[in-house]
Length: 297
Image (cartoon, rainbow, N blue to C red; front, side, top):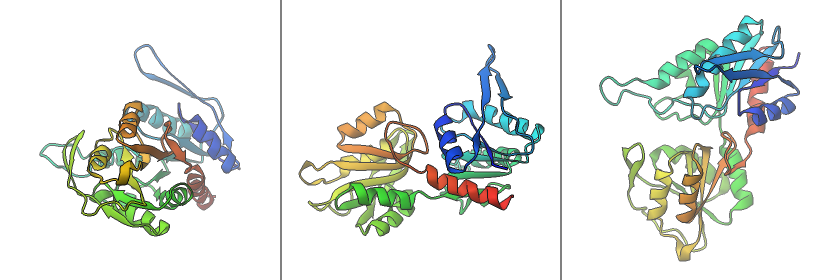
């Protein structure tokens, strides 16, 4: 039987695309808030005996987490065969160690919640800095897909003579792989973070060639502070404009405007809906979901 896919609020476009690509049905999940802020949730389509896929990209996660957990528990209670989660952006990966005494290691806490609620999870390029894989966090099967090849194709088709730049050491894994796929030169800057929205970059060791297009590549853009500081240090030839590519666009219009004023056009994948989302990763996600569904058939 085909999977039944339920998008959480504001994930309807992603849910409908996945349903089409997987030859499944897109179910209706009715949600609203009671006057006191609590969540009302109802499955308008019966999940009994079906593989259920809940779809929710987890930017701004606090308001999304309780409805998501309620939906997973209710689907199981109503007889769903298995309940999986598609979260193109996976939250709470930043706090991956106790940097100061008394801090919560929220990456582990969140993983425990999701592992208990779901039979499997698929995400895209999570922020695995101090973890080798999601298996170190998640006790249920969890797969991390990679957007690098899709970003490589986009650069090949849209950028003339790219010169790739990573704003910090954490971006090296993406920059090196994409640059190899493009046959492009690359460099990684060094960053010192002084707060949630303040970073200092060391000057780049090389100047950008005059005939090259600078392409900054990072996994996440939120405040834009890292990309903006890197742009400030670029020695761009003759005012040539740059492109800033992020896998996950968590920013608002102010960040995009600031990047434009700094001489860069922002481009992201559609893992999180936003005006700069030009790189389509949904077919890749559908392939990953299909593998889980086939393995559990």
